Length: 289
Image (cartoon, rainbow, N blue to C red; front, side, top):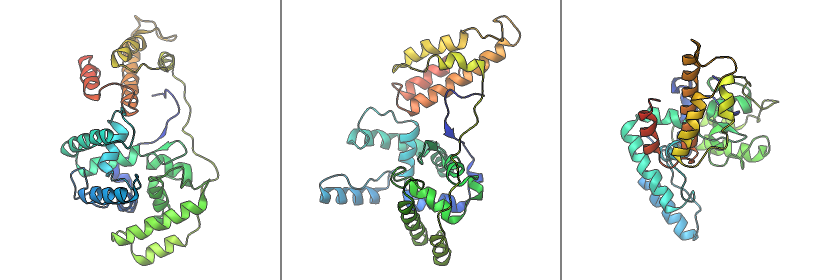
């Protein structure tokens, strides 16, 4: 498998994520995650009252499920905080809640959330900031990561260590409030200095001839049928090392199908293709699943 470009993300199963890491994000981002069906009505009305009182948007009400919808399936046709965009995310959130378990939703969230410095997901962010896998994090480090979800650039530990520590300590106090951590344990974690890895983490670079025609179509079209035309070229363009009639061509073409599907997923997640439902149906009709 190769990369179209360097993507700083490493997907991990939920079973590899310590419970206190999950709880840090839940306490900070969506404390009623296990009680609501995609929309936290209490959080919605609280945010509504705060924003009406302030006369502007000061507080959001996005749940973890809504963030999964936004970062995976929601096409960004409207401004991020507009009512129409929120309604789109709400509709997708309800569908996600009906189709996936809470554990599956949480796993997806922890793998797609942007945590700054070009990293997506807790594993990549853990390697980038602390030089270790998420399974080896301490309570203080988990709280630091959870604090980044609200503002990855605002609380970036390398650029703004004081802000990062203040935000980490707030997350720890929220964990105590939700009974995810003891007062004593949180106090010890709050007293820890911020220890960061000396260098940023970068995924290894690789080389694959199968990616050459893919990279040649890096400026992908905004319509799905334009994408299909590009995909056809990707699937059938010559490979320097495998003649079209050779026995290895079927394997080479299968690899390219995998790349096409991966690219489609990334473009859909980025809101660059017109309709997820239509796109998926056409992909299935092509036999690319």
